[in-house]
Structure formats: C-alpha cells, structure tokens
Image (cartoon, rainbow, N blue to C red; front, side, top):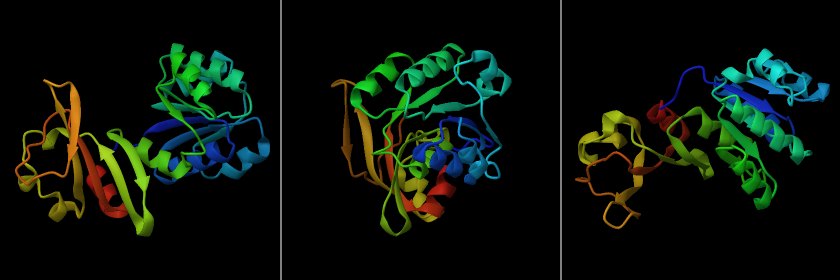
Length: 222
C-alpha cells in the first residue's frame, strides 16, 4: 500500500544515490538530497524537495535539515565506508529507519550490525527499482522485466485477508495476476511456494508474487 507524500533523505549522490533521489522525486515523494559536490546538487536542485550540502556526521545538522523526520534515510556514500558506518549509527540512534549502500558482503554485514535495516549493493540494485520498492511500504521485492512488465513480492493488504483468490478477482479489477503464493507452514516452521488455486484463502503472513504491467501494478499497489 502506498503512503502519500513519503519523505526520504538520500545521503550521497553518486550514480546510485542520484538515480534513487531522482526516481523517488518522480514518484511523488519528498526528497532531501545531500552531497558535498555542488555540481551534483545543482543537477538535482529542480527535481527534489531540497538539495543541500552539510556535514552528515553532525547530528545537530542532520536534525536542522529535518533528517530526523523522514520515513527512510538512505546512506549512499560509496567512497568513505567509515563515514557510512558512522552516519548509519547516528541515524539509528536518532530513531530513523536507515538503509545503507555497501560494495561488499563484508561491508553489508557491518552496516547491518550498526543499524541498517536494508542493504543495497549498487551492482545489483538500480535506483529506479529501489525507488519503486520504497514508494510502497508493503513491497518486499521489485523486479522490472522486459516490455514494461514488472514482478513484485508483497504482503497482502488487510482487505484481502480471509478472502479466496477467486472472490478477489484481481485480474479483472486491476489487470494483474498472482503468479505464486508463499504460505507459512506452522508445524514445519518453513514457507512453501506454489502456483495458487482459485480457492486458496489469503492469510496474514502470506507472500504474494504479482505479475503485471507497470501502470496496472501501480493501481494495485496504491
């Protein structure tokens, strides 16, 4: 489900950070973009809510620029891993949900240990894909496919719980299909995945894998 006017901070405007900030803004979010490079800030100034340069390791300045009030802060600084660790820790201590960029699995483990709830590895994660995943708070995986078709893994919204797939008829309502369903088997403590049946009842904790055109998926997710 999409939350209106979500607020994000992107700290570090390399290729990944710039793409992420631009795509989040294009999707209607409020975005604070931060970097020490004035040229990068100038390129995004007319796209984002605020493009600004300041010392992101200073908690007072982070608060002064409203970073403590964002829904998610993305630490996308790739050239200084020590600073990424420090900023991730500061933001966590401020109570901010932090996502951080890593270039190796070792860096990813360290960033998770100091408080990052999500890790992005730019060689795998493109800014557009991450922006669309962030824009919808129940989307856990977002994969753009060829020809404008996208594939997402979502948790069912509250209105779907207790209803069978036949009655929901999301193909008719939204033009998208439930390609797979993941159900938790309590006795075995594991999740099983399969193509759903029309009589399958949607339960809390299910994983739904939805396939459809981008416009149709946006209508379903909103």
